[in-house]
Image (cartoon, rainbow, N blue to C red):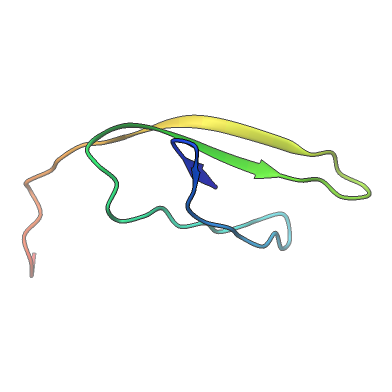
Length: 64
């Protein structure tokens, strides 16, 4: 997975699912998040990009 063109995570595909984690320090604003599958003998390669918007939220408090 890449964010704004920089690879930030890799994952293993298992049972049709993969888990990739985003960095916790993403800046506030819009980011292009791209995931890609290189393909294999039976499934074609594919990729998709979505926009993730990070917003500041002041409502969280420890112990809440």
